[in-house]
Image (cartoon, rainbow, N blue to C red; front, top):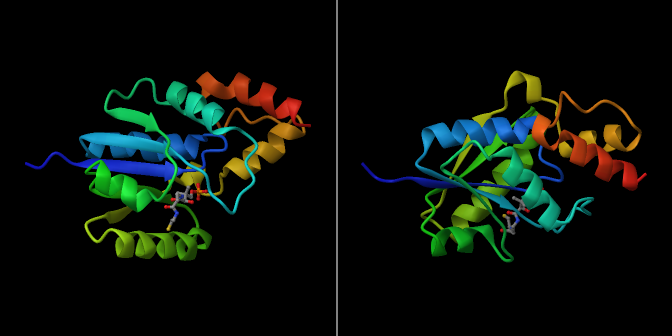
Amino acid sequence: MKNISVICPGSFDPVTLGHLDIITRASKMFDRVYVAALVNSSKNPSFSIEERMELMREAVKGLPNVEVVSFEGLLADYCRRNKIDAIVKGLRAVSDFEYEFQMAIANKRLNPQLETIFLTADSDSMYLSSSMVREIGRYGGDISNFVPECVHDRIVARLKENR
Ligand code: PNS
């Protein structure tokens, strides 16, 4: 059987329980999972790449076949260089579809060997997003149902600084 490596790319600004759900499910389905905290040029992040990687590392600590990475440049090129077979992404509501479909097509054009696999978001995460977490956290709201417990306090403290 082929050893299958996949990558879960995203801004993860910050990691949510929705991200962790997709990564955990991918880690059960595939041999090796890279989680890539990346710059999305159309977004203005609140957490630095280093902070996002640190929070993600803490969140995936219990998953032995998962590695957190970051890089500059195109995802499609990184996958080619590192022999990654597929991108795994979560799909929430219909609103995600157009954007994700566009990226999947572009990545396939750039690297025809690269597949994109979509996992449906868990019903609890259907309307959960990092931007919602930032907004609620910034105003002192309770985000404990939205982020991994092990990084909750760090995210809360950091969002308070940004207020
Ligand atoms: O969580 P996001 O912001 O929706 O993730 C988007 C991300 C980071 C996966 C996307 O912007 C990306 O892949 N960036 C790396 C550069 C790249 O390959 N861009 C072309 C994508 S078609």
